[in-house]
Image (cartoon, rainbow, N blue to C red):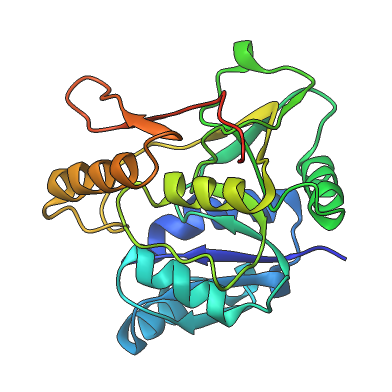
Length: 241
């Protein structure tokens, strides 16, 4: 049984079908298990008109705003349900030779099913030089653009900027581990293109998100900018008290 697969999307009916939905089509993922979450009835009509219906199972009207949409998706799914999440602009998952998308799903579902963790991801880029036939279990950033998780409705996202860092921390506190496979990474262009997270006040939201997480979880993360980009560094040595 393959998990349901969710894609939050905003004002990107063309991009979603040329990126994420195209990748899933190539992989042969069952379209009836693919749920697209949009922000309004108007957007739903736009996607129904612009996205070929054979590429997805259902378009669901959720909430405007990424954190609001993430929490809506959590409430929509069953408690304890294992699910896959993709952003709408993922070009592909680049994986080690002889390791497939379905191998990754199988391995993730096995450890999540055994409650060894509740959150599984891959490396944050597709640099094959970093690939290894191993998995880390310490506190490591699990990208929001692709992850596999057990749904817990009480784990609430409170910020749009750095929401994937917040999710990583919440799951790590719940389980004491997050699993990040070194067997592959996400191929996408971060903060690129139209649609997605609205661009207004993006930097201010990122600064606030970094400040909130660094102050709320001072032993688990600290601010460490990348150039002029507000960012966080997780404490991989952290242990659950």
